[in-house]
Length: 193
Image (cartoon, rainbow, N blue to C red):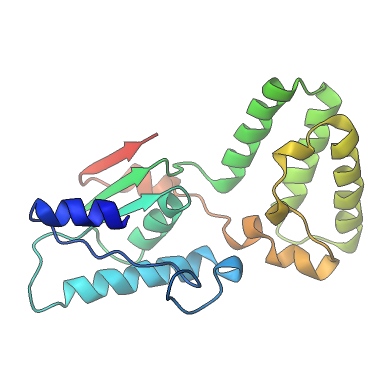
């Protein structure tokens, strides 16, 4: 983003780029942060620019990858004049996981049973409350993933080593659906996929 910022500065556009929590010189723990915390950080950057003595005419946001969810979540708190998403999701995280499973089923030639097990695992990940019984079933499904060929679709952030770790999984800390934002946002938007 530094390169993008440098280029926009040359075009007369001011860019404020920052490292998300725990990266670069930023404080915090990126691995344990939530989408709400990332949105709070982006809202703080917006407020900084909004209250800056220069008096910027328009304030927008660019979010890449998971930053697409962050910018939509931030729009719930502030009023961006425009939004740019680069390979940022426009669906819920749950929907993205299901789409990845469906695409992975084709790529890896998964059986119907393997897809069913992957779907069951995904559904447990997104349950409001995961019981110890669910956690044990998750581990059974992970074992099946190895033999059924869908373990390639799992990321280390999808795996909980202990029952207590389930609530710390990335998908549980970032479960968000930007649908209402995108349906109601009526300002300039560029989404690049």
